[in-house]
Length: 186
Image (cartoon, rainbow, N blue to C red; front, side, top):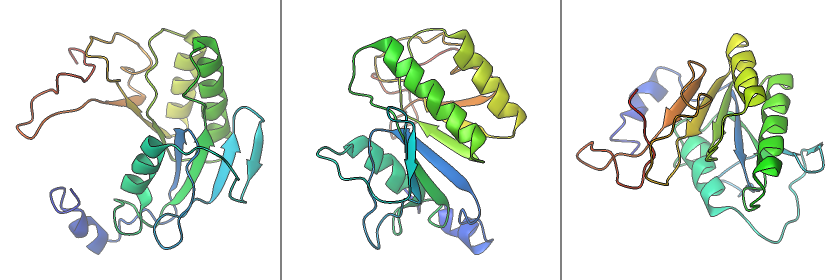
């Protein structure tokens, strides 16, 4: 995909992510020497930040994949960015807890000079505070890149379709919408 996207031409122009702060809002993602470097972790459950790699029993394959696409040494589009893991427990089924955790994540990113927020969380409800946070991050020139979700349905969530969030769906090799991807008419 790096070749398909012609990323090397951007790197030659100096666009490698240097001095850009990127947050992956996801379950735990860990650094792997010479493959992926995480600068720090903020846990929305404990409200604690650390630069020491956490000791955990489970990892997020999805989070690691997302982080590797962003900043992996050999696989990342922006390998020189400052990558942070803002931990949101996506495995819980309580929507209110996911929303609270997501809001804490965005607030932390706003307060800590994050430039780009990557979120792969399906948010199936309209929440006025979340929409306000998206507007606030937009005013501070922070970009949120958010997954539209994978439940094959039309998604009318104003958070995902605001002018402040770049909503991402999935297409196939022929550039047709994948049958599992959420969508809207925009």
